[in-house]
Image: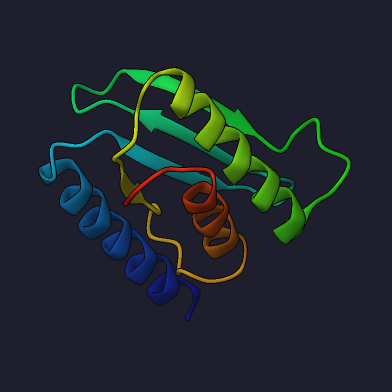
Length: 111
């Protein structure tokens, strides 16, 4: 049963990654670990433009994801980036991933 879940998540990750790369916009890449959530903006050539994480935050979970979303939007504004493609790395769009995306939208990113 566990192998099926890994295969479906990795297939979903390949699909979402390919779609976001094809858009030609910088990608907002999300990674979740057991401890925290990470976000990076990567240009189409693969160079990391800016990134942030919830490592130094006092909160965890959805609250930390919201703060990371707001912070990545502020970093993108400094780099004059408005449009991004949201690469959720195969994670389902709910919980932390959803709150990070909504906070980034409130911060001024469009995707």
